[in-house]
Image: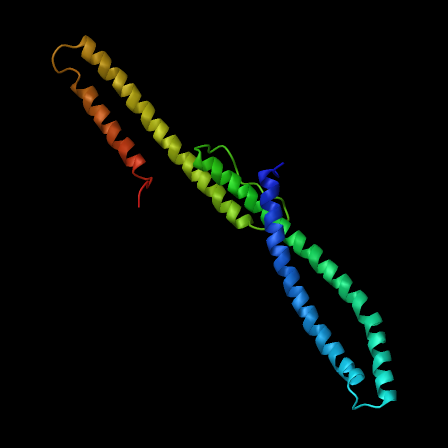
Length: 193
């Protein structure tokens, strides 16, 4: 069974970011381990040192292993959990913004971009909400112009049916003025490059 879209999106973002973070942490750990343990291993393995110096290096190596690895593993675990929290605070808002933008693309301007208090991308959500408000205002303007055109068309139809001659001309001129205003309102939107 396929994972739900939201879960797949967030898990994919987690996996990419967490894998990258773990690779960086392991690289730093490798450099740290080489810098700390390589001199002792060289001292133990090569015959230029006396038996006593080699035994001393071996005991230091064992001591350092006991001393260093537990805090390093705890630190790696904490960094991993921190990266999960960090990606969760980014992936969740990205998912919500994507859903709102998809609604807008379908013509639904009723939604809002809402984020949790500690999420990131609040400024981006604010810009999306401002865009929605602006689009709503422009759509309301178009709807108002449309209602005026519709009313003028009704008047014109009534004038043509009831009036002899050119008595319908003022209604026709009013309709043309409404159509020009409607065109000006629609010209606010760019639909081509």
